[in-house]
Image 1 (cartoon, rainbow, N blue to C red):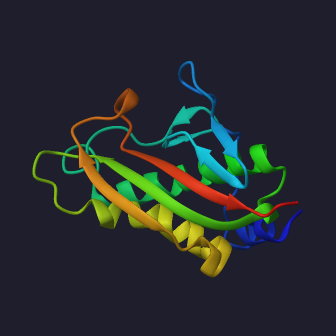
Image 2 (cartoon, helix red, strand yellow; image 1 turned 30 degrees about the horizontal axis):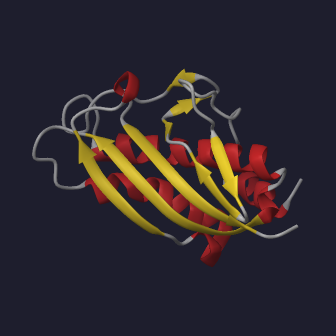
Length: 155
């Protein structure tokens, strides 16, 4: 088990199975040392964990949990693509989308759930640039979706 998977275990977290693409696209695309991940939603081992809009069916706190689950899905896709989380040189960028009611002004508070997972697992290498955007809807009424770009080491 690599050091980052050990860190997850220490935190009481486990990686889900990598989510299957929901259409005719790849779950990731590697270009040189850059790994571009397709958007992932709040599923765990294929089962939806959070559906509905923040400000209606979901709260900021439950949205935060949905973002954490999205981050775990990202880590499982990185492991699939790279063979090990130890190949992560840094998390570069994350786009975070929050399914929210009109006028919702706190998407960063929700997306912080994913950012916190990356920081807890990777330390400084997990800190990234990001966007946190409220949207009117997401696939299958998911509460959160994130897209991530990662730099891998050259090994």
